[in-house]
Structures are given as C-alpha cells and as structure tokens.
Length: 251
Ligand code: PGA
Image (cartoon, rainbow, N blue to C red; front, side, top):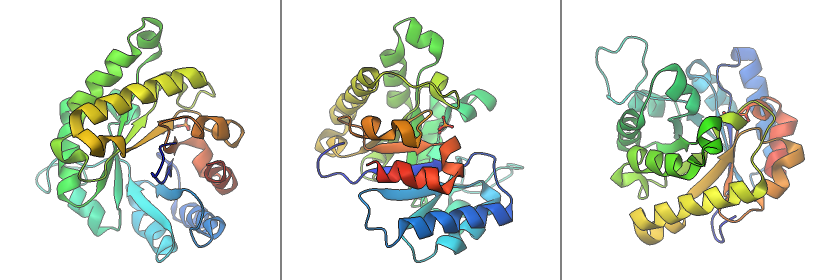
C-alpha cells in the first residue's frame, strides 16, 4: 500500500460471459460494493460485447467499467479491432493494455503497447499497463531487467498525468494458482516504483502499482498489505462476485 493512494481492485473477465451472466455478475458486484465507501476503488473489465450491458448495470454506482484492449488508431481499416474512442463511447473509463495473453497470443511488443496507451490517453481512458516476466526469465535471474525494459518501452510520456496504472503480473502466476513469495512481490514493486519515480518524478510516487496473478480471497490480504502494492488485477476470482468482493474487502 502506498500512503495516500486509494487502492484499485480490478477484475479482468477475459473472454468470459454472455449478456445474462455479465449483467448478473456486474449487479452482484455493485450490490456488494454498496455505496462505494470501501477502502478500494472497484473496476470490472468485461469483454467488448458486454461493455454496454455491464455499464448499464453499474450506472450511477461506485464500480467503474473498463475494456481489455484497444487499437492504436482512433478509426480506420482495421477489421475486427476496436478503438479507444469507441470504448470511451461505450462507457469504459479504463483499458487494460499489454496483458501477457495479448503479448503472447497477438505478438504485441512494447512499441505496440506504447502506441495503444497513447491512444487510450488521447481518448480519455486510463491505461492499465501490464508487465511481467516469464518463468524462464525469473529462473535466469532476469525478472527485474525484463520488467524494467517493458516499463521503459510501454509507458508513454503522458502516463503519469493520465493517472495510469501499472499491473505487475508474472506470466507464470496467471491462472496457475502459484504466486511469487511476498518478498519477491515487494522487491519487484519497489523496483517498479523506483523506475516510475525516476521517469515521472513525484507523480511517479503516487501512481498505482497492482499485483496480478492468482490473487484469491485466501491470499489477498498479505499481498495487498505489502509496500507499493496498490491493489490487484484479478482474473479467475473476478468471475465470482463473492470472491472479487472478498479480495476488495481484504484491502
Ligand atoms: P488470474 O489472472 O487471477 O486468473 O491469475 C490474472 C490476470 O491475468 O489478470
């Protein structure tokens, strides 16, 4: 936790949900969030097809809506893609970018993530930029170098002014039930904080750094209590309202 910074608990629904389940899940999260007086800000990121539906279910409440990716161009001949202004128009306030599943499945490198983050900020969205090492990179002792390189390559100049969020997600911890040790999470978050301060000055000291990768109700409290851990990016557990809310309550 960073003093004076409100933590963010973000749900990444990935490619899950049809209209009926998406609305029900969003409503259950909103009901559980009550008036939003909890310590954490809440965000859910459904697939594109559910943005309007989920936005309608959450309207006027404290839970924000985000998307999971955007194209770097505002419009154009890009069949199958969705632009940042389209997401904003559909009610999104945040967008996850550079998730390791996009980096792996779609070959997105740091330059692509940077361009998308610029587009997101230009459209008035807050970028949630994901970074994280593979298991081989950690075993080789390269985790910090990899994450530093991803940060340097993926974050645009306007990142701090936009209130951008960094999510540290070790690839090997995503969906596996495995997490780094608390000491390893704290060390990586400290390294990310140092890099953000070096690049963005004082503003870099206040940007939120989320941890992601197998966050569950049972392990959330000690992770969220670590210095420089300002919330969580939650995949699987965000699909069960009670689990997502329990993680938020662990802040
Ligand atoms: P997980 O996913 O919580 O299911 O590990 C996290 C993520 O990919 O954002």
